Amino acid sequence: MFPSIQNSLVHSNNKFQSISSFFTAIALFFVVFSSSAQDKKAKALLEQVTSKVKSYNNITIDFKYSLQNAKENINQDSKGNVVLKGNMYVLNFMGVTKLFDGKKTYTIVPEDEEITISKLNENDDNAITPSKMLTFFNSGYKYTMDIVQDVRGRKIQYVKLVPTNAKDQRKEILLGIDIRTKHIYNLIEFGKKGTKTTLTVNSFKTNQPLSKNQFTFVPSKYPNYYINKLD
Image (cartoon, rainbow, N blue to C red; front, side):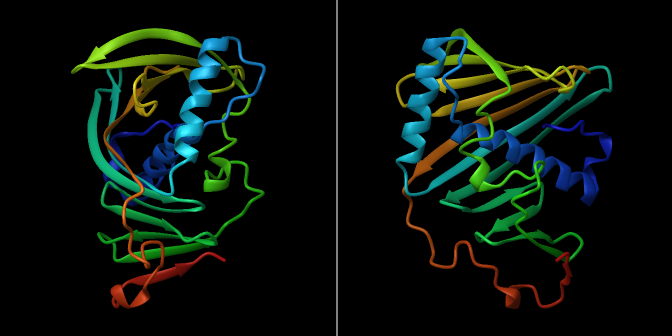
C-alpha cells in the first residue's frame, strides 16, 4: 500500500499520500494473522505481538520514516509521532496533523492554513482506519522467520512477508520485532521498482496520561483556516 513517492513530496497532496503510506505501515503494529501461516514460529511470534499491543489502553509512538530509491536519486528522511487509543488517533507527520475522533477525520495543514474534514467510510477498501488495523493483514501474505540482528544490545527478530497478489507493487516486507518486549522495532518495505521504505520506532510508550481533548477537533484553535468539508 505504500505508493511511490516522487521528489515533489514538499507539496501538500504528496504529503497526504505519505501520511496514508505511513498509516498503512502502522497497521502492522496491530496485525492479526490467519491460521494458514506458512511458518508456525512466525505466526506464534506475530500473535504475541498482537496480544501485547491489544492489552494497552493507548500507545504513543515516535518514529523515523526513510524513503530511498537509487534509480530515481531519492533519499529522504522524516520524523513524526502518533497517539492511538481504541478507534481514535492523532498523527503528526511532515508538518501535517491527521486526527480521527472515531467518526470523522480532520487533516490539518498549517502551511496552507487549510483543514479537510471527511466522514469515515467503512466501505472504502483503500482507507486505512483503526477498525482495519486489527484485520488488514489477515490474508494476502506468505510469511516466514528471517534473520536475527543485534541492535544496540537488543535482539531483533525479522519476519518476512511476501504479498500473494502478483499486482502488488511491494516485493517484500521485513518486520523487525524486539524479542524481549514483543514490540515492533522497525518495518522495511521493498518495492518492485527499487523503492525502499523504512519505518523505525524511536520511542514506544504505553498507557500514557492523555488529555480529555486529545482526540477532539477544536475549531477555535484555527480561526483563519479554510475548512473544506468533503461530506
